[in-house]
Length: 171
Image 1 (tube, rainbow, N blue to C red):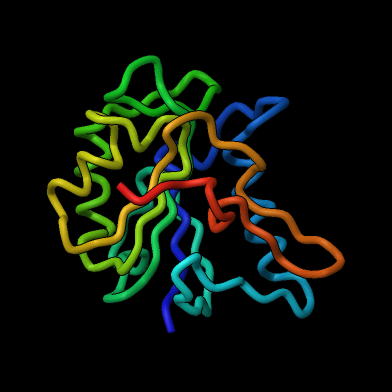
Image 2 (image 1 turned 90 degrees about the vertical axis):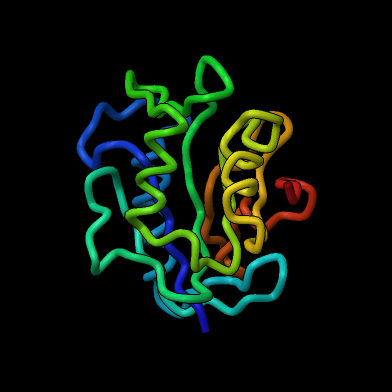
């Protein structure tokens, strides 16, 4: 069984925005996963997930590193150009900086990585760039805008837009 690591490459403390706030949705993901009887659904490839860890920028410590076979979701908004991501609250991260952060997280041992960010599957964006450096990992991203939020807990269980068919494409 694998752990699910959700990485938000921005500070944990930051400005909360009204719509599409990464911090709010990250906290909701943790709350939903901890809800009574909540089960984290397996990935779109059927990898069973046992535990959720939410990690922010500067929290890439040894205890937050991925283990072999873990699944990583990088959660951000598309930036002003293909080589950056944003939190839509005034913070950006350049692709090279993000790649260095992913090394600190030990992302190269993940079984699957989902870049849940608008346009992350386009050439020169983070999905294809990461894949070119780590060809043995299944990498997913978006060709257009990401929709549906990161996760929701409904009466019938835990739902993630990340696993939703056709939401992300393999790069």
